[in-house]
Image 1: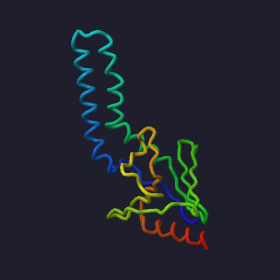
Image 2 (image 1 turned 180 degrees about the vertical axis):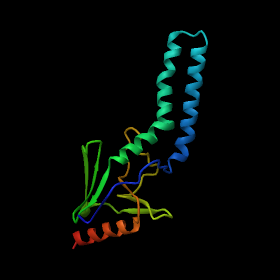
Image 3 (image 1 turned 90 degrees about the vertical axis):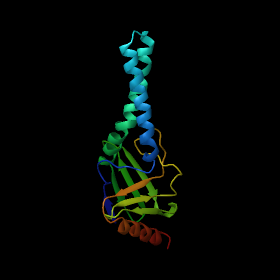
Image 4 (image 1 turned 90 degrees about the horizontal axis):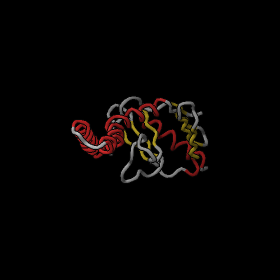
Length: 164
């Protein structure tokens, strides 16, 4: 094993959140206003029930997706071997992703001022959905806590050795 770690923890904002946060506030605000009006007025039962799924979706979009993403990252571990990158995730380590170095698409890194950053295992999509978004099939990313450049170089060195 050449390197192993776990992702950055806690709240993590992504570029897509610049659009998703205002959208989620509008969605949730409208759904909550609908439900309050339906409950406070003498409306038929269907109107009172109709807004509940929209309120639940709004609550997930506003806060639940951040909680879920943080929880997933808290149960995720990374490893770099001389042949592959492994990402073990799930609440009991149920999911193992293996990314062979020999067939890995070009990787990119994004570094923050504190040395943490993200390594994308392939070309990022135009709009990258957060991991807490249901059905998101995003480019695999490693969220590195410290010294992202060193991890990036370690991956490139291991790839070079694989291709010799």
